[in-house]
Image (cartoon, rainbow, N blue to C red; front, side, top):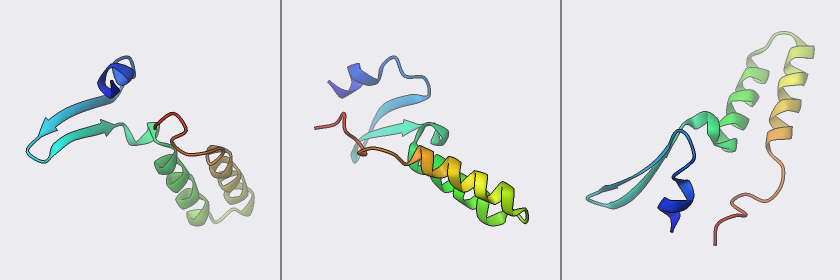
Length: 71
């Protein structure tokens, strides 16, 4: 079922290995990775306005319940 749900999503693949199945996705399609990248950009910025905007973007990414579509 999972394979059929993810068939039409670009950058997502399911492969089978010796330990079982593995889901691979472009890190930019995962909200946790986007959040961490934006937070890292904010911390690295010397400009407080840029840092503030990057933190705001990161917080907008981190909304709602994670994995709500999974059982």
